[in-house]
Image (cartoon, rainbow, N blue to C red; front, side, top):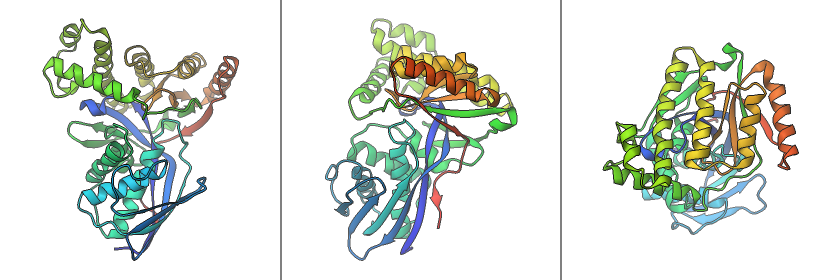
Length: 365
């Protein structure tokens, strides 16, 4: 049991494989260098007081609390404390000092970064060495039942299990993460996150509607999740009378295969060749899953035109960021082309982060 300490958790970017996790499928995320840090001190009562850089007012609540009692950014803190208590963990009172350089509203999982770091801090103060996959489930419950967002487990698993210099091959059905060595610099490449500065919003019904459509498709096909589908062509034919549901299912089914193909290429030392898969993934999200927005579509198009080997929206969608695989010597040209086109179309100027696969969550001090 600790009376004080510092824990941190990274943001994540998903290289390929979005909206597959809650369908029992595959994804290939990795942890970002940007992190949320929580410095925690144990209190003798059951009160948690959380202060975050950039937020004027602290959040204060009693543990365990009840779902939905705290709103705003504090819901992510209170939700984790509540979910830990629901899991039978004796959550102590605590003073939490929070700071983060994970971009907000960019689809880089700033909320899960916060939740995972709070989860580690509170279990650390409680003296509980919790299994990382179990903590991921607890954080998911906080997100689903307390914060009200029906997210899957991809973000939490990537944040908690990632390794430096590795991608994280996530199997949502098996609930496993397999590290896949990845060194873009060795191929003269950079992984460039392009924040569209078109903020995404998941708790507005759009994400939930996509998930409901996938569940409806699985039910019609007589399977528990779309992961169970063996014959993609036959499945899509069976859904032909409902074009929208068919499109949603087609994205998930083809995306799973793209993830498997990407993993095989990276393992074979053929990282540059995944560029085509990234762009195909974006087209699938744009046309079949319909969770992209014009700003993001323009960024993908112009990045590829300017020399990126491939690019795609990353995260839940409806705004947020693009991940592009870019030859290092073309990075400046890509950034110029994207910014010029975005501003010329009347959009906000994008922001850029060159990132590399980084360590997952853990205790710092």
